[in-house]
Length: 168
Image (cartoon, one colour):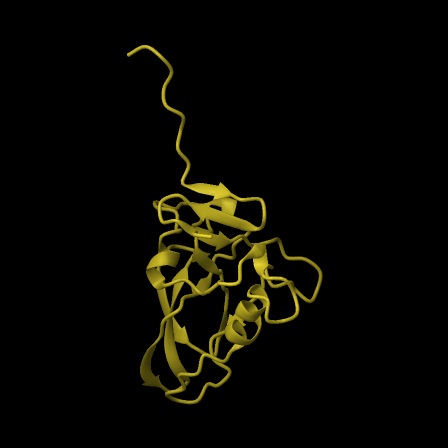
C-alpha cells in the first residue's frame, strides 16, 4: 500500500525524428508537419495524393501519386535518404489507420496531437474494392473528422500517412 503509484503509461511516443511509435501495436507512424511554403513537402499535412492516375472503369492500377511520389520519396527512391533511416514505409491497412483514431472524439481532427497537424478529412489505406463504378475503383478511407469510413474513387485526391513495423 505505501510507496508511490506506478508511472503513467503512454501509448504514443514522439521519437524526435518525424515519427511516432505506438506501444500498443508496435507500429511506427509518419508525423505530419504544418503546411509550409509551396510546393508542399512530402510530410506536409495539407498535401493530397491519388491512388490511381486513371479514372477509367475497373482501373485497378496503383499508379497515382501515392505510388509515384509519396512512398518512393519516403523509401529513398527519389535520390533522398530513406525517411527516419528506414526504407520500408507503406500505406496502413484500414484496421491500422483506424487504430490511431481518438475514441470519443469531440474536437476535430480525431487524432492525438502527437501525430502533428492532421486535416480532418479522408486518409488513404492500402486496400481497394473494385465495384466497377463509372469513375474507377472504390477505395476505403478513414475520415479523421469523425472516425467514419469513406468509400471514394481511386482517382480523387486525399491525404496519406505512412507506417512501418517497429522492428529494426
